[in-house]
Image (tube, rainbow, N blue to C red; front, side, top):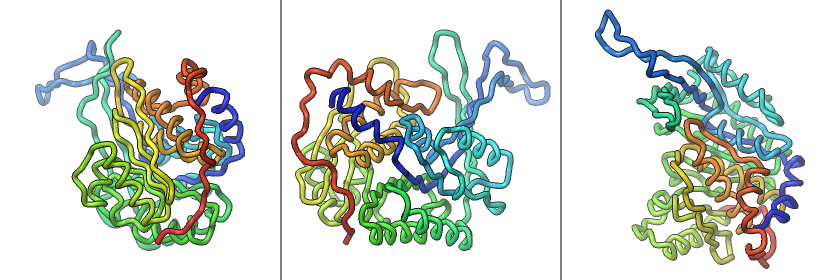
Length: 358
């Protein structure tokens, strides 16, 4: 894709309406100055002195960050936080972003706000060094009344958005937002709203999800299709079979190898990754891929074009150290600019949204 085509697609982003359904974490970064280390009188252990604290939305919030960076006009956060200080920080960070609507983002007194607390040792002229992370999660099932509330909101919201992005970030089933009840509501919304695009992603894999549009990595695809083959052609074949069986898009990320995409009834597509240009941090790359795929496909890009934009965004994000980064349209355009004259333009038709899973 060249920059002219990118801008033709991106000019539609302000009209898009996208809902992100899933586990919203607070990413809290603690900046540690090693020059200020002390020794605790009580324990004899090193005391790390925090000189700055910053917070931003993480997990499903990272997708929201990327959608906002792209200039998407209407972004609905669908999930919950706890009635605690971390929840206040998360709401404040979400509310600060352009286009984000918190009407369907609930405060749940029965839940803790999920947190990734990331201590970073900051050293002049060197990349930040992350120490052991301190996580806060919910370890008991999501209450039924909270499930019902979220499922009802998904049903209502699906009638007036273009896309539902679903992110299951928790390792323990039924303890987050994307429970069986909520995923069933997403599936029903896909069935009842023919022009709706749905892309689901799960940290645990998508084997127990209903037939939705899937975004996954190669290992997760292999488990779903019961295949151990990881060669590119094998992955393309597996993705095509899964897309045909679900009637929905299948997107497979291949880390440094790139990305594969399949639509029902069409040959699978492959786009290579951009080479690394410096030290990298892969955190958040997958969420940038999800955001760019959703925005581009809904704005009229075909599958290959959308994957090219997703790979450019992922390349930008992984080169942002010490944070979970984002990629704006102008940044993506700058990365694509050297390819302006050589990028071939796909001849197949734009992505056709809709279709029912089996």
